[in-house]
Image (cartoon, rainbow, N blue to C red; front, side):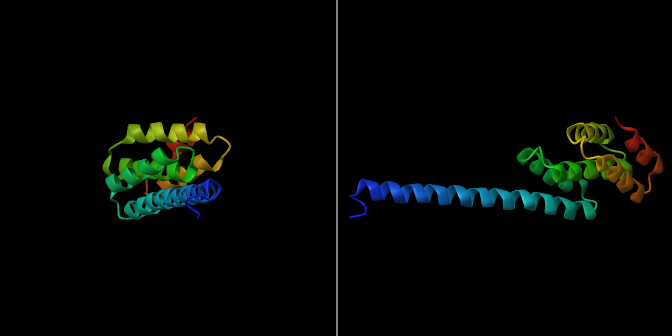
Length: 131
């Protein structure tokens, strides 16, 4: 009788679609969180290419997310300091982060402190001077 009653079919299909949409949102959020956590794991191991890849996926997924963007900046900065590679790309990402999150006054100091932990004082000062 459920299948022959149009009111009941609509009722159940509507609930089904809502449940599927909610499950999809949860899956996407879990996927995003995985990109971030995996990016930091790779970064700790100095696997810059993998870290950058994961953070770029996170940024593509949620470009407005501060943690995805700062993770990408940190990965590029670490690669720049340790391998002298991707320094220009790092600068572009930092400037973009500062512009997009200008209300977050800690962004520059956070990145600068991070570079100091890597042992590059001149680069840390350079980051603080970015406008």
